[in-house]
Length: 188
Image (cartoon, rainbow, N blue to C red; front, side, top):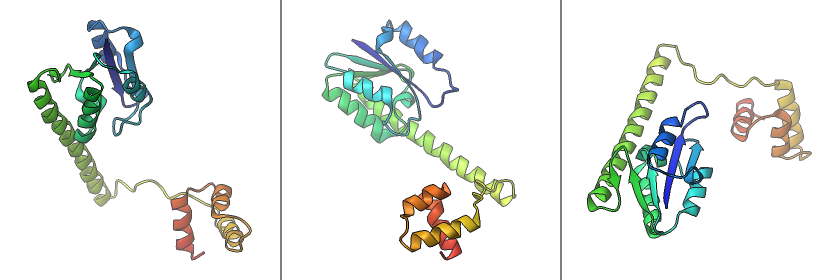
């Protein structure tokens, strides 16, 4: 049976190109799995559903390897898991087909290239932010405004054992990192 996995990173992105490819390949709509999520890890609903469904003799198609994994380790682990189930993997863009030795070799090469590209994007982003900060154009996320009096009052209750830290954070609508950083800054 032919399966197709499709992924776009955000709700705004359009999966039409990938879906059109699945149709060209003659894949039944019931076996097209679409996630609208980052590919940074494999914790994706439709991906997990597809992996649980895939069985011996199936072939999993993707438009490109970047749709199924963003790093080499994940890609190779996914393909190994598929092969342990007797499922072959085909990436149309890179012409990778794990039914051939050349396809297996190319899979490793393209996986490394996808990871390199992702790392380069992140590096350029960090460099751009550093330049913008140096020019005073980027200040990061604005510091959360809080009611100082409420912080002091709630921290006194927390320190007195009248409430837990979690209850205090909830009352102040603060996440743990922010809460503890503010407590330290204020010497509370």
